[in-house]
Length: 67
Image (tube, rainbow, N blue to C red):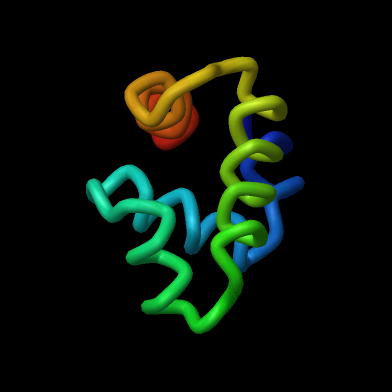
């Protein structure tokens, strides 16, 4: 799992952390001053990388990797 985490860029990890905290894609885009579409792309990439399809699955996979 450590290699999966390292394949995400710093910005992708940042977007995922905010999504897991419950921010909407629109809120993340505003906070990070990036486009809504960029947020969607980062989240999609993380979902595909971890083999999940929602924030709960993403959180679970990241928590597994932190152990």
